[in-house]
Image (cartoon, rainbow, N blue to C red):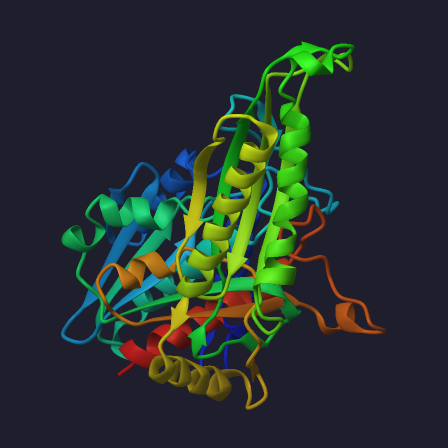
Length: 414
């Protein structure tokens, strides 16, 4: 391969093949070394090293967030978010660059770590786009604010950066763009105006009763029975309290109680995850959860359970006008059928904090990085958060970078 050989990122953007090779190597390096949410220390340092090498001004925001500022004369100010955290998943892709990393969970236990949601793709695409713009200042004008955001998986990172003065320290953008790799065919995009994802809330509920010997249940206040009743009754919220046309999910993901089969324990604990499409439905569902937990506790003769919020994802709303602008740019760059308007899913994202915090529009889209042959005969590749999630490295770099530049140049292009 020679420097003279080029690769088309879009119908109008070409780069040397060496540029793609360089960023594939960078992508694989990030993939090998994922870090858990709020612990992205090496990742942040690697991003800083790259920005320094490119001569891009940058600073830390929050504990592991990095902000890069690329200025090129008068013009719009555009924000671009790339999330950086991995997941507690043992990778099963079989890739030669698969992760064997481990990390420490909030409870102190050790867990395997994998970039099982493609954030390594997002980092690489943002850095590749920054390099392209640095090397071609004649093609654009304005200011690019690169937001390398930690803690997306816990809905922690975007808000932490905002609370740490992100928009007091960086130029305030006119719009914030973000993208996400999904199990889609390369060259395709999901983009719609309005809500792009669901609101999400996660709670931990501790039910406290009275411990007793298993042979003397009359001396106990059994928290397992009480908590089990709560779990079962929570399943009626979506099926019996919401209209059938309203999408919502109430999932109990963990349940822990007791240490021995002949001891009725003092406490039981469960955690739940709630997905709702809008603020009104969110309040309705969360109020119903509190009512059911209180009612079942009262019926069981135990104290009011303790509820602790684990995380809270904001809305992810695409401004209609700007979503249409980005969609038109993607169609021009990748083909008239490249953009598909998907119905709102139940997944959640915290990128909305970044634009909503300063009242500017945001646009979020997804892109594919999988070859067409993985979609034949009714097959689809493993999805995000799967231990087998494995975007094609070259397609991830080409399509992620091409999509990022397309969105950015829709605003910054001369």
